[in-house]
Amino acid sequence: MNSSLKDLFVDLKRLEDAMTADPGDEEIRDRLARALAESTVRVRSLTRDRRPVMTTRGQREFCAAAADRIIELGAGGNAVQSAARSLRKEIEAGEAWTWRAPTNAFVLSTAAAAIGLVWAVTGGLQGDVGDVATASVLSSVALVIVTLRHRTRRWQIEADRVAALVCRNGL
Image (cartoon, rainbow, N blue to C red; front, side, top):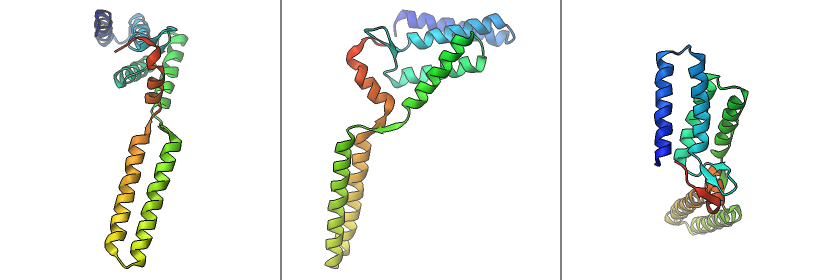
């Protein structure tokens, strides 16, 4: 972690301590909300066109906590509150699952199911319970493997997409 981020975290801690000591002080509340908003930009990676992007789980967790805290404070002005709500929506949207290479996943899933089904039917027609059980287990395992290998969070796909454009890594 670079020294400017360390300084930022020290400032945030100082403001949180001041807020704890005097929770009714609107000036401290505003300064804390603005500092948190600034921190969400500084902890993210930066693309060559100066766009902040979240490329790691740590960045996402920090930004989610900061956005929640800004919203909880209800301070910093309309722009800060709007940015916090927008950041929160971006984080929530990034948590959705999606298929990586959906065509490949579909082909592999279909093949696993078809092979398992043919194997199980053949075993059933031959009266071999072992073949039916083995086919069921192995085709199910194959489907689980395909799912685990081809499903990912949206934010991970976006992070992979912008990786070559990042000129400064964040937190």
